[in-house]
Image (cartoon, rainbow, N blue to C red):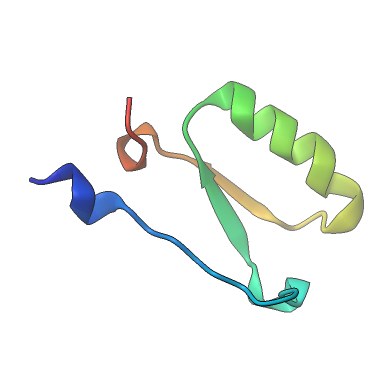
Amino acid sequence: MHASIKCAEVLVLDKLPKDFIIGAYVSCEESKSKLYDIMEEIEPDFSITVNPDLFFQ
């Protein structure tokens, strides 16, 4: 499998309403913890999934 298949990019002109973002993938538990700390007050039900296979290492 080519690593470039995993690449994704989103370009947003000014802002994206939070209703369009339902979750995030992160590479490790440390990143999950940091993102959770940021998101818990903004959106408590925000889904954070650890999946290191989605990231270049």
